[in-house]
Image (cartoon, rainbow, N blue to C red; front, top):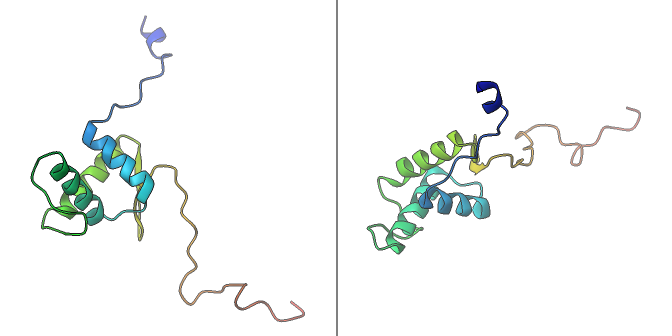
Length: 114
């Protein structure tokens, strides 16, 4: 009996309404920092009749709340944190960055003969 149960694919985790709103916003505005994600969550809470502030404002709790939501979405497999960029939807490739002062063939091609 237990062998049969392991063949069934588990359902993807269900998201709360707040998590779904955050994921939709992340998908259309990625990458987002912890502050940006938290400020959006505070704006969404205010729009729903709760306390909060506008997206352009920041409070002492924006970074903490945005980080908590991002980490929870990452645990569920929906988001990833890219160092130097912020939160993105899981599986989203970011363009490779050229290191500052590094070799860029478009700017400095090899001399003739190489």
